Image (cartoon, rainbow, N blue to C red):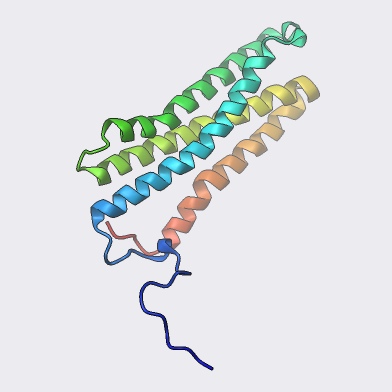
Length: 174
């Protein structure tokens, strides 16, 4: 027996499918900012794990046996990781500092750009960590092309794929 359609919004509908006509631009910006901050919290955990690993490496007996180039690479990767953590936490700081500011759409746009910069730094840090480990384990001749493949994977998955998908979708409402 067929039932009449339920009134009200479809609970199975994905809110990302389109704007809720009842949602104001301010409310949409608030929701999007909260969603982005949650995504950044997940990323921050990963960055903190990588940073903890890198901190521990310097205090292992084998660290002194690394060549000057490998130690320089270690320092660069450590600094990139710290910088990625700082940049990825910046939208959270903006959100806290500007919590009740009426320009949420602008705060969202700035935060999204900062998050993209953080992703670039994180991809560089993770690629550098792969280069460091693979250089120690396999040698530079093998490490360089493998790390290049890792860097290409980050570029493709984190930047090119979202760009290509965004181009194929209709423009979102402001």
